[in-house]
Amino acid sequence: MKVRKAVIIAAGWGTRFLPMTRTQPKEMLPLVDKPLIQYAVEEAINSGIEQIIMVTAIAKRAIEDYFEPSFELENFLQKKGQTRLLKKMRELSNMADITYIRQKEQLGLGHAVLTARGLVGNEPFAVILPDDIIDARKPALKQLIEVFEPRQGSILAVERVAPADLNKYGIIKAGRISGGVARVLGLVEKPEPAQAPSDLGVVGRYILTPAIFDAIAQTPPGRNEEIQLTDAIALLLADESVYAHLFKGIRYDTGFPLGLLKANVSMALKNPDMRTELREYLKTVLKNETI
Ligand code: G1P
Image (cartoon, rainbow, N blue to C red; front, side, top):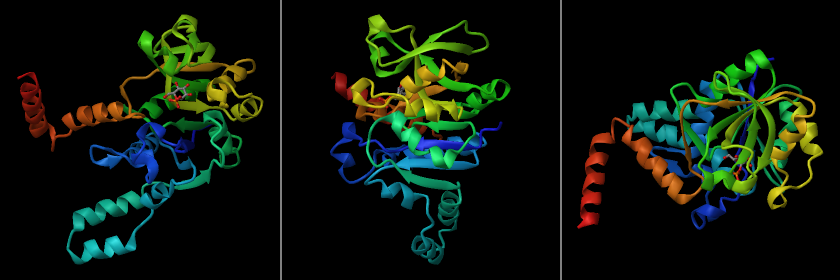
């Protein structure tokens, strides 16, 4: 079966970004010239996804408004003759077919995915965690879909993580890696380094078979008393093959202030409109700092 739907999880409180997230969703924070959520939506579309299911929560209305047309703004831009900007705004609101569903209680990532069950139905689907921004020539999700197609089993995006960071990720136990793909033999959510089965951490891109929903429904609360997607995937292993893919690309963790700042600097240095001036600016800042 084809992967047609992507579930984007935008339901977290964003506590690491307080006070900024008191009145705005963390997914609306800027990365260079767009809010974070737009990168997730664009990656889904550029990977061939036809329908996006956004799991949101209370105080996330700004995300819904962002992808809606604003006729007042369009009128205004038209009157001012700002045709390029007008075109950009129209493209934004026509970008994707997005359905929103709210996670009423924040009981964990597994629970958030389960919220989308009715909208996903009985077909394989993608999950995107918008905190993980992946800069890649071929969209990371597309890479996963290509690994999925011949196998028709769940696929997890993984990358090697430093020992000190093992307790920040779902860590897999992997079989032999061939062509960047390995069978997943086990997985643990945020293990202490000594207990980690490898250095392969799951990043926020998944292709899941619909069997995951029953697995989540049977998953008791785990780490942090939350229903963990990692634990549900571990249950799924009893019935289905699950694969990991070492995707090609650079991942930025924008889920905390310094990570977002680093991503902004790196991505802006790749932006032709900003690159030259930013480089000069950074050089000056660094020079002045060492004086
Ligand atoms: C979640 C998952 C974790 C995964 C990570 C990727 O954790 O629970 O398994 O490795 O996303 O970013 P979170 O970052 O939401 O704590």
